[in-house]
Image (cartoon, rainbow, N blue to C red; front, side, top):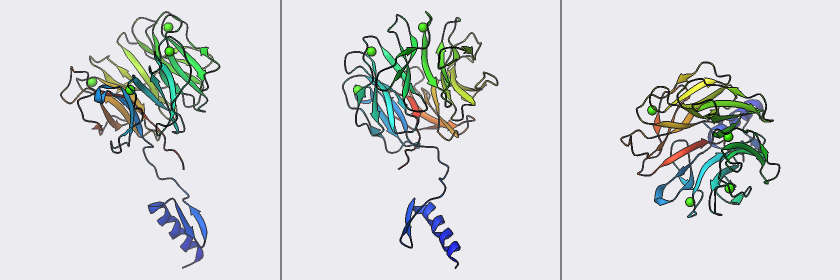
Length: 309
Ligand SMILES: [Ca+2]
Ligand SMILES: [Ca+2]
Ligand SMILES: [Ca+2]
Ligand SMILES: [Ca+2]
């Protein structure tokens, strides 16, 4: 066997069993990363009569409780590199944005304001967080540095401006607003200009989430009579339904490789109970599968990247 063939065999075995292997006294690292659906899914759960943040593998295994506090802990959001999670807690008296490591350690408050601050989403460079707050009298979208400095208000409208999502290219924020009557989805530049409305239905649209390449937005809509997950191009064209169930299907989030979408649904026999479970499906709506199964609310799932060692 030639040296090259021997090396190739080592690399193949290395890819199958272990990312790092010794070859002739030197460390050989894998040369390609296999396609996966990414890292863990983070969500909040009301199990044990207490809102807390949990993570699990994309198949529902390895459930891990990340917060363990008597306060309300919810709205988790992965940093773009999968190393940290932003979340909401009222442990210090009212809803604030907090950050923790992916394993739940080092929980710390980003800012402090007597108003309710919720629904964080990270900038792609992980230096800022966009969130919603009622600190100026009604719900508006704000951006803040993760050390709590540099607060900027992005919207200024008496309507409910909520559920912001930072675009993967860093330039835009998608959000939900009822400023034109019914709730619809808008995109605005991070400097607050170039506001564009992406949906024109009179029914309720909301909860936008970007595809990893920024070309599409997945969202929630009640246009067909009950809450379903829809997808559209990032310019608002080609809107189409992904779920079709009489229960509520909401809060979609794309997997980092773009192949799957995680969402919350009240299907499975609890149609009016408001008991949501976490589900995944392929990005075209096929292969819907339940990940959680209990008598408590599990909701607001977000799919994170694998942290590179
Ligand atoms: Ca809690
Ligand atoms: Ca607050
Ligand atoms: Ca507003
Ligand atoms: Ca439905």
